[in-house]
Length: 290
Ligand SMILES: [Zn+2]
Image: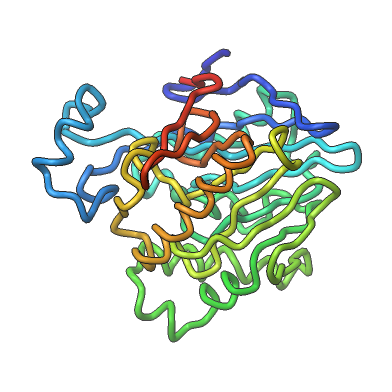
């Protein structure tokens, strides 16, 4: 594991699922107020659970972890990081292309871009200087998610920090004719499935690689922090539907606990298996990447 930019892990162990190699590619990280990430938890309850994890400002640093898949037929990137929006947000992120280069890949190597959902930290890297970042790639996302984030009446009701990136970054995919919209569970390539996991956003999806105990589920933002295994009812200020977020999270973690598959997530540093006990879960780390 090596680091060239502050906070940027540029080379990570590869996980192999059948004939698919999975590699976490860091876009960087960002610090959030705990009350934003765990919006329905009072500070007396939350405080002790974050012991030793907060920075000098009292914020929690959260990684941005895209996933690169090398299948026998294609190179697939899941989510694109914060891109140029990092400068606006003042976050040490937007390093995806550097991290890809350090792992031996260029933007032109990407055949397929999969978008788990359309929040800025996942679509920010889609284009830069008015040009698509991955011009050779087909771009795949849920039709439900696309419809939500391209509807001006909906966007007008959302905070500008969420609406503006969607307005700027999504329509060019349609104009360039590189967009494929998925409905329901969709096989992207053999052994790689996009699976609806609504709640965090209306069309939020996770990605399933392989199956059974040898499979891996990229949970995207269905889990935002390792604490949500022990406390699956804790939701953030940006979970679109708190109720559906929790229902989906429990379903995904329950499935992983049952079939023994590995889980990882965009904002987690840990990959592991899941254990279930009386309405709560435990993440048993396979490895720690930070
Ligand atoms: Zn996110």
